[in-house]
Length: 393
Image (cartoon, rainbow, N blue to C red; front, side):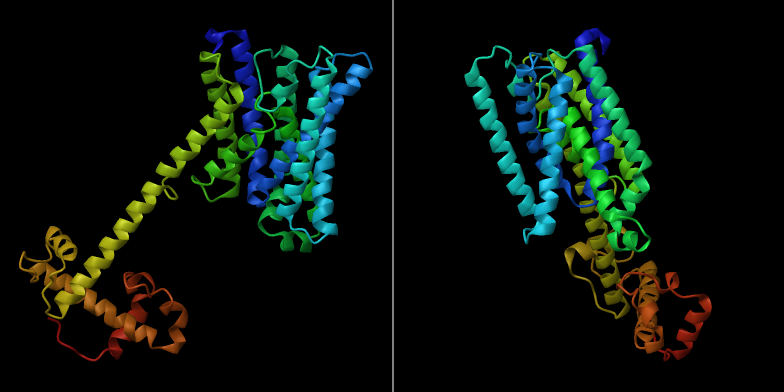
């Protein structure tokens, strides 16, 4: 990493820390099903950036001071967040409609202010528009330190508040019943997202920062169903996304860092969508194929148990491959034994499903599950005693 130069190492380190913080913080937002709020927060930062620039210039300072611009964007983002909350609770607007209204108004006002600044010919507005898509070419050590410290503090706060935020995300009613102030928890969650958004606009830009907040947790959801693991995986994915994206951008100076980081995160999402062991597309396709095989084998064995030859090609191919049927569709010796077991299992299920007292156990019937996995040997013996003797072919 250091072989690419001091600036590239600086940017990659800051982007990695920012990505980890964004992934961890965004996890709670995704679990709370409020991912779009981050988009409103991001777009609401633009007026604050422009106004902070004008204020600093009016006071005789450097309008491009990162600390001042971030402070202005934070105030503007917080105001936008309050507007979303007020519109949601004080009017009949749904949350998505309130987000759309705040996003469009704040972003439009910010673009207007940028246009005014450009027309003033102040000589210090150069590079101000880079906050839209991010720019790291001129990043200083102080900038990277600000991003690293801010990201670290946001991550620490998210880990400290993870229990109440997870409780509010999964069951707000239970959280309120236990005395937890869900509204305050939501405000804390939004505040953390706002902090990440403000910190990350220098690297990724306000248009793309939402991707760094959302992509890692939705990618992590493919790999685990447990909330704590999702948060951990999202932090790792976010850190790798920021680090790898910044390094790729450093090898091609003409490529902007922000979009490359987002595309790197998108590649991780696409790969997880494809190969994740339980939720990935390949796992889903293989699971459906295995289920289809089980259904065909079961139906084929039941057909053989009743003395019917199997003619369906796929079923016959599976039976032949398993040594249960001959090429002409008749059962082999092994097939007759397996067919008898399948018929006995189906008969037991029929008796169980006809008994109102066994409704809970009967609900496990899916036409494939052996009854031995549901009942004890004594219960099965009682069912066998109720079966009328019947010859098995």
